[in-house]
Image (tube, rainbow, N blue to C red; front, side):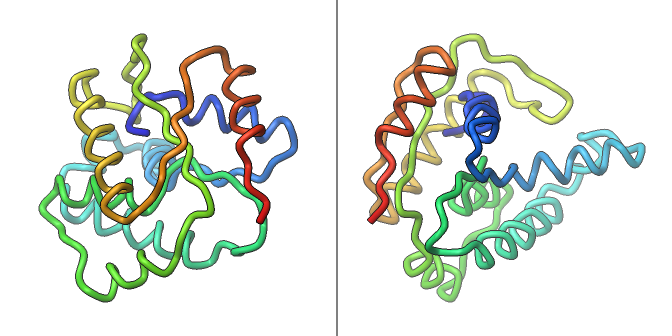
Length: 169
């Protein structure tokens, strides 16, 4: 899902239940930068440079993930590509080939929440979050994923839904 769809809250609950979770690299980079005394706006002042840094961090993360372990990520490389494209970056043929070969076993997709809240690291408006969510969905579909739509509900209900839809093959 896009910004503020409840991904982080859901994943924190899955992590508390004992599942491995990889946090969002962009959020981690923003938190590190803010801790070092920079604002999120300063860190993202050059959108192309920012997205190149996040793409590099995400590539290192996703290329190194074990293929046979069950884990959840708070973002995906495809989501990062959407943000990169919004900054004017387009994937080359090598990256496109990598994306077609490095596959997620399942993709759970959360639509934007109605009670969207901005924060120091989530600066998008509710309208922009909805737009980005649609772009992320389209990117998954372009790469041939069948998305598992996670219905809105309580965190416990969403955790139960995800766990009931995990494929182990």
